[in-house]
Image (cartoon, rainbow, N blue to C red):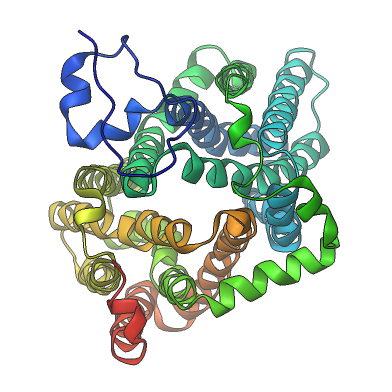
Length: 435
């Protein structure tokens, strides 16, 4: 049966989004999956699924390989910190590149380079030529590549669906992200245990190859921001384009308020996961297996929240949901910090995951919705720097934990995050009126 495309009410149809026959009819009838009617978004969505799975596999494979080579827990932290340096320094450049140059080409080049690096690591392991510096060098290079890939890919998502489907599209992307977080590390662990570390990196290389195969068919309409000509993009210097992007993000009150919400959550609440090993070993006394259960519970909660956002879409009062979600996120982390009982902690982690999505996926939806098309790459480049704020919060939480203990430090910062959301609600009227 032919499935008709939903009416968007837009004066200009989205190109390349013709109807599709291959998906089960029942899937299309669910509001949760309505953005999958659009071919361009389907291509981006499946490609993003491959990338997310590879990224979460890398969390296990790279750490395991480095620990095998060095037996140093310190170096495990160093390699993750190294990946954050490009994010801090190059995000403004990457966002501007996504608005000035071919977004599709940027994504393809980034994916091919990532795949080649994973393949090189696999070959080095098999030939017994692997050294720690290879792990560090590819970690840094991957950080550079990912910094340029994400703004371009995220900006294309906003052009792949009509504006009234954007919340649903980003909700679907969040579903993929949380599914990958649940199964990616497990797949890497099984491959390492059964075949070896090289197999994990080989599979990651294949995933990036598959992602590239899904990116190539994207139409020319997604290559550049809608409504801007090449002559217009070339008139301003690169530096001026960066400054214009910052100015747009700052003067756009809705975007500024949304980023403020995300930044407060990233600084004060989200870093609580840094102390999960302390909770698992010393407070709840459940070991590494228990820590895995806590993370799984959080992933399940986040997945449920992502499904809810994808299903309800733009019917949600997004400003109130972001502020209320972040406030409840902080309070649920406070409750988790005080819990001495493992089953209760698992349940609370599910609740924490439920509210976590409001501080990221929903904010991303608002930022993309209220940013003009010609500025989306630069805005998303700025948005991804929130991960740097997360690192600062993690360092602060670790320092407080060494002074006050893990429970008091986690509870204090999470309570401050909830208070920050309440303060934004009271002091920034535009934040609570976002639709």
